[in-house]
Length: 202
Image 1 (cartoon, rainbow, N blue to C red):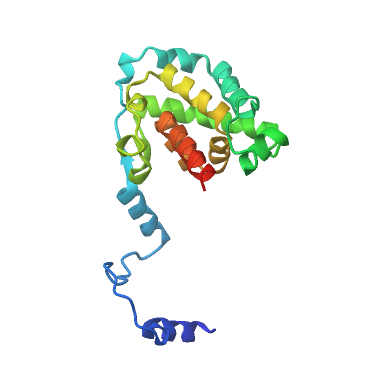
Image 2: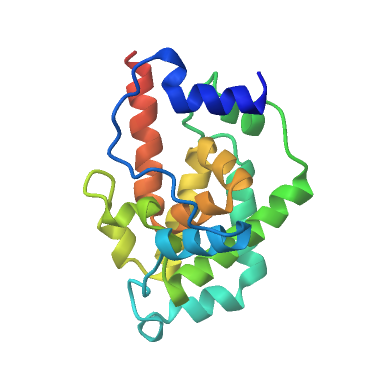
């Protein structure tokens, strides 16, 4: 089908009744890609303060000064296989438990990225999309995710990476997922558990 025919079909509804929509018609608001990108950032991003004032959490500086040790702990949590709880037939289980799918240096590099996201989270607050903030979702939120120290948050991150290999998959594939996970590791892991339980009942 040519572009002209596609336009004609679209405008007429292809001979079918056009279903009403609550959205406004296309307005051509953005002159270029950059203008659209800037609007997306302003419309969707949320810049929240840290849940705890950084100067009231001495564990931040302790964790930050021991970077290599904690990055190693994150890496070892991701590759640990004996406590994984995922569906045995899942892609995550196959990639992280049965056979290594990712190159080890890449996993190590992403361990640094997770650590960086942790430090950014406790110093600056959540820097993600509004709809990705699990702490504001009554169905998914965990109070502990907003009350923990940096050290406790790191422990929750490590436990989740050890037990939920689907989370390891997520963080290897999306910076957005890393921010979501680090912002609310307990709630994020809880969602994985609920999904797994729901799937097992089908």
